[in-house]
Amino acid sequence: MAIKKIKTVLVDDELRAINRLKILLNHFPEIEIVNQITNPIDSVSVILNSQPDLVFLDVEMPGMTGLEIAEEINRNIIQTKVIFVTSHNHYAINAIKRNAFDYLLKPVSIDELKQTIDRFSQNTI
Image 1 (spheres, rainbow, N blue to C red):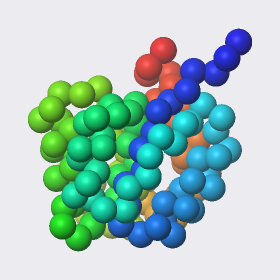
Image 2 (cartoon, rainbow, N blue to C red):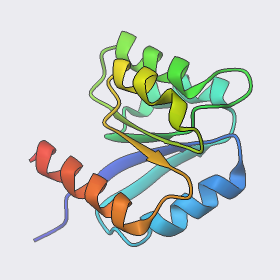
Image 3 (tube, rainbow, N blue to C red):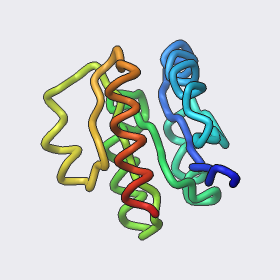
């Protein structure tokens, strides 16, 4: 039986952070990275056009914050779930208010990522 792919977009202004997350996500055959974006301003149109299942989203970025991007996703009523991936724990309440599926602190551990992906998979079946 084929694994149902989880279409995923990665948004972080730091390419190194995206590459680290990609390395971790390679451990999960159900994850299909359909796009990676380092310019947060471009991310809204990419997300709205591709309507991925998941977006891994940094919070502090120049031009547009991850919280603002999450607001746009919510405003456009698409089914995409947002997982914030950040070094800053003080945005967690604001992330929850924007319907965050999860909030992971950098550096992300593989175990924590597995729990998040497993929970997402169970909620979408």
